[in-house]
Amino acid sequence: MRNETHDPALRSWLVSANAPGCDFPMQNLPFGVFAPQGSDDWRIGVAIGEAVLDLRAALQRGLFCAVPGPALAGASLNAFLALGPPSWSQLRAELSRALRAGSGLQRQLEPCLLAQQAVRMRVPARVGDYTDFFTSIHHATRVGQLLRPDNPLLPNYKWLPIAYHGRASSIVVSGTDLARPCGQVASRGAAEPSFGPSRRLDYELELAAYVGPGNALGRAIPIDRAEEHVFGLCLLNDWSARDLQAWEYQPLGPFLAKSFATSVSPWIVTLEALEPYRCPWSRPAGDPPLLAYLDDPALGERGAIDIQLGVWLRTPRLVAQGRPAALLSKSNYRDAYWCLAQMLAHHTVAGCNLRPGDLLATGTQSGPLPEEAGCLLELTQGGKNPIILADGEERRFLEDGDQVILRAWCEAPGAGRIGFGSCVGTVLAACEPGNAPAKAPAQQTPSYGRNCQ
Image 1 (cartoon, helix red, strand yellow):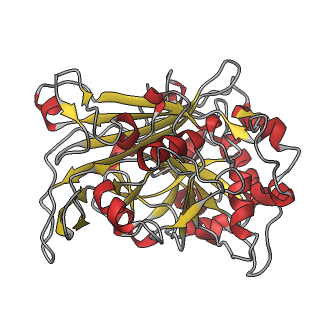
Image 2 (tube, helix red, strand yellow):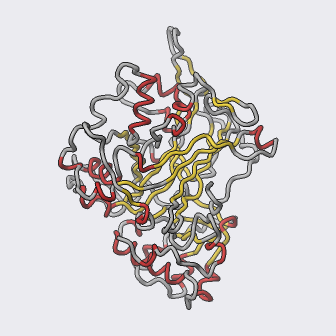
Image 3 (cartoon, one colour):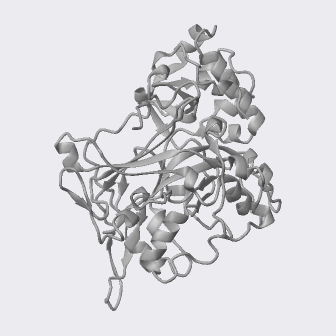
């Protein structure tokens, strides 16, 4: 499955791509959509080092002929995602050869580069539909212990990848501030619910997959072909109002508690770039056998991906004191109970049609240890045990002005480092219906090209 683009010895003529700890070296080459600062001229780009390669400008110079020009000349990636793996791989190979040290195209490509700090990013594809799965058994069990101590894991969990259909219109790119949501809350012992701002606002550390070609209505995608329909992954923060959720989620699941905002990182790391970090996927002995449509022998060899994940919190007080963001937890995507191929196969088995640009999120990625929890609901045991930060601050849930930073990266001997950049969001005070939220206080947003650790 590996090819020349994965060679860990590759170096670029762009010096910043060769820096130790760089998120976007030669082996990565993620895709996004950007516009120069002060412009609304959105276009497709590729991250390399601390720069963005403008693909439209490169096409105008007669470069990168592996893919039809119209698929790369627009303001979103949907047309490119629809082409499928052969075209994706061909373009990646062309990019790698053009950007590596010694390439004869350096002088032609240098005018097509912009500094990442000189551009704005947006959600890289038009997301028609968004589905959020529940693939971490560690997260499912701990949350279940809070809600149902005698029966924490519901009996269907080990039989099928559980999910809910989310709200695509409120998916926003990293760096977008979000207002604290308002809604109904039922306090313990109260005769009726009250209305007001959420007091138990939480983050959820997730990954998400962008769908490629998709399938026709009524035609399921078999599991052994499922990853042909996954272009790549990004970070995702499924912001959650836990007090609203507790009152509304029965019997039909989340609604206002999760529909107010979902943040995604701006760069899509291709599935091909992650190939060196494939690892075996397995189920614990004694778990129910997989039904045939969810089973594929290849999963045992390479169904999981070794992606390290982390959450940092930057509070207004930390900013005022000049302190760095506080690390809250780390986990790894290889611990997921359900893998990407199973998510996609299950989503389509009843005949649902997926389309280019659809987003499939993994759900909160928590590890087996309590300190590897991917949300505050787990870390604080539902708010009972607050987190104590280095400056003495306490957090049970998020407060106004808090900035949450999600990061992900792959790193191992004998493989090129693959970074995802950051997924950042700052909580604003709640606003009354019809009014705009106040602007967030100034905070330093991490550069997407910096070391994740």
